[in-house]
Image (cartoon, rainbow, N blue to C red):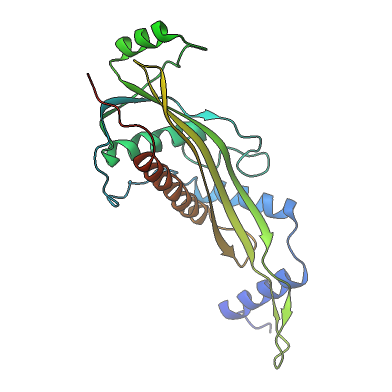
Length: 241
């Protein structure tokens, strides 16, 4: 009679097979997509942190333009829909929530219509009056990608001879370029780039969907905290006349 495999034996067998037959990128890709279909898509959204507290720098109303997607790569291979939200829309929502909670501006509002191309002062003034705003933040999403790489080599225990699989490092890269424009004067008040890489280790080559979501939210949080710090420290102080 065949003995039933215990959970410990089963896990050990999986680790041994993973070590002896490393998962290819194509297999990992299929496993990632299968997990997202089974467990559901995670969300990018999170509650902005209340610290650090910023002093109001601009006693003005700022409008947030939809984030422009300037990426040259999808989030993971050819897939770009692994989250509940479309990526540009999700990043736009986070930008709005982060700046509203930061209290760097008197008021933060959303904008749907883009700035006119190559606007002159009269066009900017008309845009300002139409939307009842003083400033505009324009942001480009430069990168938002998940990468995988082996974090070591397959090893064998010295005394037991057990094979230990090398973990896989899973990384999420996020980078953005943002600028703040004062409409009445046509002044570029502030512009800068922010970039962060978050990482986690997956013993079985891939992370579960919620682990990908958690890593992504942590990385986005760091990116937007950097953006707020730079916005608070740099730029000109503009006042409403």
